[in-house]
Structures are given as C-alpha cells and as structure tokens.
Length: 137
Image (cartoon, rainbow, N blue to C red; front, side, top):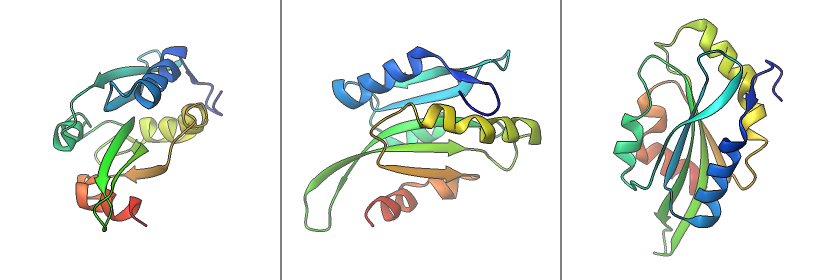
C-alpha cells in the first residue's frame, strides 16, 4: 500500500506479468480510479509503435506506464528492457500530481522486473531518443 492509501488492484500485477512473461503485450497504462481508492489498468496494448504509446499519455493528467522497450546495442545486438514511466505533465493540476507522487511506490514495488524508471513532465523527457540514451548507459 502506498502512503496515500491508494492500492494497486491485483489486475495491475497480473497484466504486468503477462507483459513480462507472456510477451504478448508491449505496454500498460495505469491510473488512479475516479474514487481515488485504487490503481487500475486503463489500457494494455500489443502495439509496438512508441509514438502511439506516447499519444496515450494525456497532456493534462498524470499516469504510470510500463513499456517493453526493444532496442539495438551499439554493436548491433537486440535487447529489451522493461521501463516504468511516471507521467506528471506540467499542465496537470497540483492535487493529482501530489496523489500520483505519493502513490507511485505502491504500484512500482509490486512490479518485479523493471529495468529502468523514467519521470516525465513533458513529451521531450519521454521522447524516443531521450529514453534510448538513458537505457543504453
């Protein structure tokens, strides 16, 4: 449970396991429920297009996401890393930003196998090249 009292529903972890082990999903987007009591899955997708994933992140509201990121190493090898995104855009209201920040660990700690974490407040911080640069380190 997070310090905010918002709990991740079991479907959050189950869907993550499907992405991690089943390799059928490419990304999952999570949000806090309308009653502010739980974390739920908003979208899961098999679409591997990173730009389509970014379009799912709202301009004026917070979300979390997990993306199975495939990339090539400098020597041409294929790699995958599961990345956790904390999306808190500048346009979001302060109350949701605070609630998402205080609830993040409740979700994040229940998802075993995350290789990297990206925090984004605008689309430049989650752009393909920015993420690639970060995970290749």
